Image 1 (tube, one colour):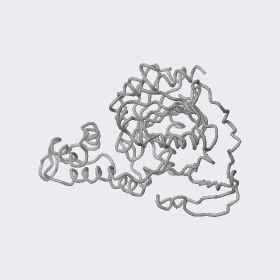
Image 2 (spheres, helix red, strand yellow):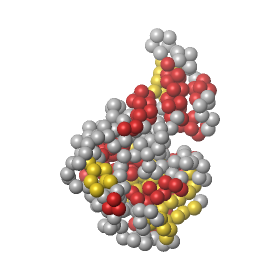
Image 3 (cartoon, one colour):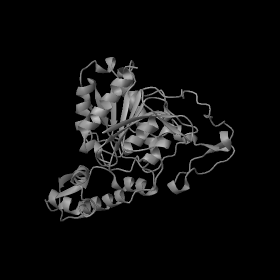
Image 4 (tube, helix red, strand yellow):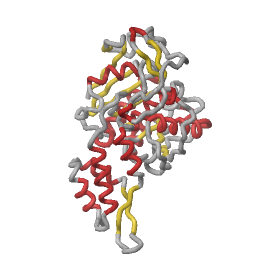
Length: 362
């Protein structure tokens, strides 16, 4: 396992520091310039990602062009109430310490990080809240599925639930994969809402939509639509055609639930989540996309990026982008794949605990 602390010194150079302080105070960086309110052009920011939001451009420093998509930080996005699970340490914990909010990845739920959450509850001695993001778990289904909307849901939950419990201590937000990009979106949209950010195996970059997740959807739909599938063994055999990792296959099985067919009386499977909506979001690039612009959006709070050593979701090449959005960040590598949160939950909890304890002492 390996920890490194980084600090952004300029847009082109990344310097490594070996202490807890950054080499430059980036609270008001000299190269940071917000877009004005004058609208010079309108149009899609990333047409290949199906984003038709209005944009504004102005001349930035170094001759660059800033792009301001006002819809990314809009407060009028339709939100849904999120289901959640509480891992309670004590009744008055939220008054004494910053609680943790944990967000799962695609096809996950509030149960996905349960082992890690229980560990964090004990090591940090505070309450941990695991949320179901929209179109997942017990949260409502809705056609829009992108990061501004998911972030708005989380912001609403913090406001509604936390207005009485989070008064003294801002929450620490933790996310894995899709949940990691959602967590990053929350702190960029609302910089004063959270105290710290912990990202597990993702980066603030737009990538090509992955081919693996649509394959998962295809096999899950086969299971749901096949009247001859009655056992978990049959389900796993179908999933085995696109995924060999038993951890991932068992994770995908959590999407399914059994029911008795009223016509035949036989056991069949149905999906807990709207596979059609999610497949549409995947193929359009909403899950792999990242629309925030580091010239406009930046968060200077303490940020931890945990990476699976066998994963490419947050490779070294993306660290410059990480630094542009989150100048005060650290990297911690754990032996594992993209699913390091479920493969090594104790190691992830230990890294987060160490990070939180060090920065709460500052």
